[in-house]
Amino acid sequence: MLTDILSRNMVTHMKTTIEIADSLLLRAKARAREKKMTLRSLIEESLAATLDQPLVTSKIRPVTFKGNGLSRDFQGASWDKIRDKIYR
Image (cartoon, rainbow, N blue to C red; front, top):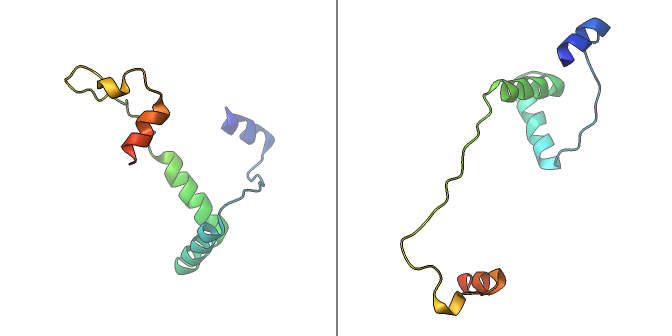
């Protein structure tokens, strides 16, 4: 496990580089200032809070309707034809 490796090697911090949207970084910096904390602390706190939440997985149930399938106009039609008709 990663925590076992870290404790054995006495490593407490790792450096990494990430790319995030400029607008998100500006919001994060502003929030850090509001909370009187460093950007690093805000990011660590936010990441820890996110990782502590249970992973939500949901099963997608198929949506079905009573009927006899596609109309004659669309039987054997390509998805492109069906989609084009939907967006008209």
